[in-house]
View 1 (cartoon, rainbow, N blue to C red):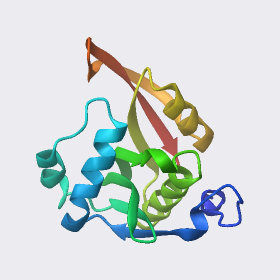
View 2: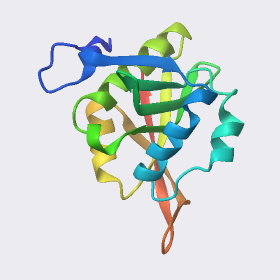
View 3: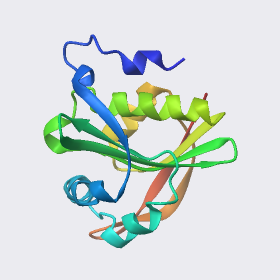
View 4: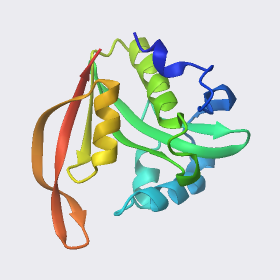
Length: 162
């Protein structure tokens, strides 16, 4: 079903060179650097430390030995909750995010997961467009969910049915 996300013959993609490792403490500093670069209100090191052992589906994406992306996700019954996914700035728009979703969906299949949920900032149109192309659909909004520099903004809740 999600094989198209893992294509390695795409000339504009780095997918043929990528490797995946389960998220562990050795990845923490690199993930924090990516998080600070990508998120206007980044998670703290303590937040990552607290979730490290609780996220059975979490992984990092490497190009050679460099961590260029990460995915923090958890399994709850027959659902996947994607808490955080990001790609290092220099590697965006090169197929890395699509590849990571392919890995996440393969892992979801192993767990018998039927739905994947995520929250995204209402103002993050680039991410919302990307998720739409992957098949995610808006199901609701949560007002005042994310902190901003000037207050708070809504989260759009998306679901993908497998």
